[in-house]
Length: 282
Ligand SMILES: [Zn+2]
Image (cartoon, rainbow, N blue to C red; front, side, top):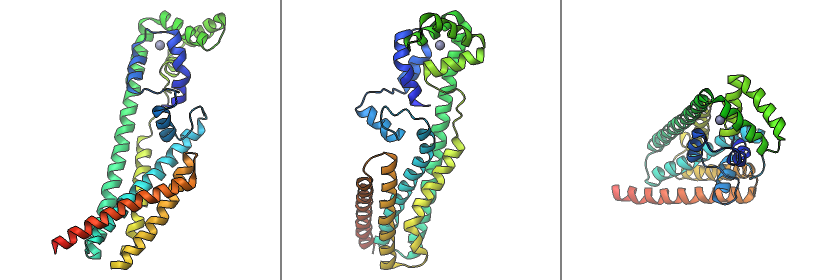
């Protein structure tokens, strides 16, 4: 759901009404506020835009790209660690390849399934809230119309105009539900969670990231394979980190270096553990 709608509706709803079951339920499930602090930072990170920026387009289009870049970053980190960990145990190149391919598939399927489940769950939650609102509209249309008028008044619409707007919008059941959903629940009832698309993007993105450090092992092995994985992994981590930095609208260099640092630590630890286990196994 678009958070900006929730924010826009938040104070209005508080001022105009307190009789609706549906919004309370939804609010309890997805608390979103405009305040800075942890919530603001989380929104900034996951929403890809600074608090106060209500541009909608960036969220919609940036959302898929950001998910793709983050997914590729996950795939890269997973397989840099996995490939180097197995290589560190001095395993044969075919074992390294097997581990890398297994890591790629396992991660990609896991990401895709997670995406599918979360988008479906979100969609079901929205449908449930809409059903509650639909019932309220059917049970007491007059109260709902007054509630709507109150929400417009609280937005600064003069009382007479607010009543008129509320009356017109309440004439048609579908329009009424749509308006209540947007103003009161902060959800767009027509938004369809693109579960399969999000899922496919996650699968592909993770695979692209995961194939990079694995790729050289189809041609070289041993020390050369390790060096190639490290170089490819480092360059890819810098590039992905820089991309993540542009989405978060902050220091690109810092973001790139941070991604590289995370990848380095992960790879060094798994390589070290792999070496230790490899020695103890022989
Ligand atoms: Zn309502």
